[in-house]
Length: 113
Image (cartoon, rainbow, N blue to C red; front, side, top):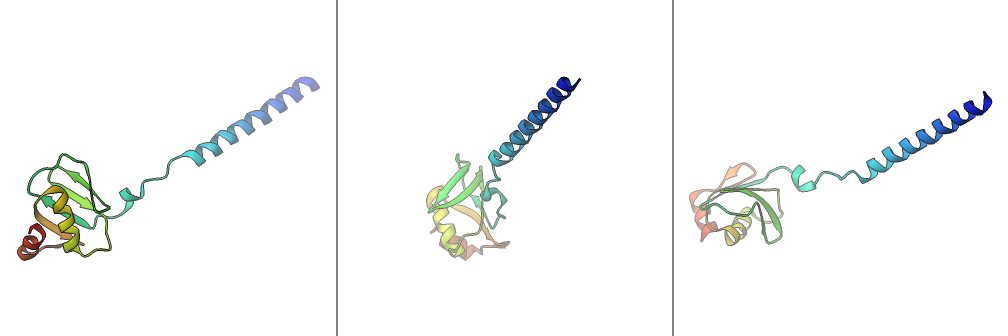
């Protein structure tokens, strides 16, 4: 009786240790969410022509695009400069919004110019 009780106790301890190790290691290697996806949308651009790229990089700034609509997180540059950089990579824009404020026709002309 003592032998089977001892074996059962050892088996239980080994099983618990193994489960603890697996769960601890699993938490350590679980990927963290990508920061770019958690950052709020600050810029929204409507392109004159659809882009084939799902991701556009304009002077180090990453834009997520779906046909004619591109979005990006906040950057330290002025909105007009951000717009011009995007135009260099994708072509003309028909509208551009920064922090909920849409560009005027004059600002769009400068951006596309």
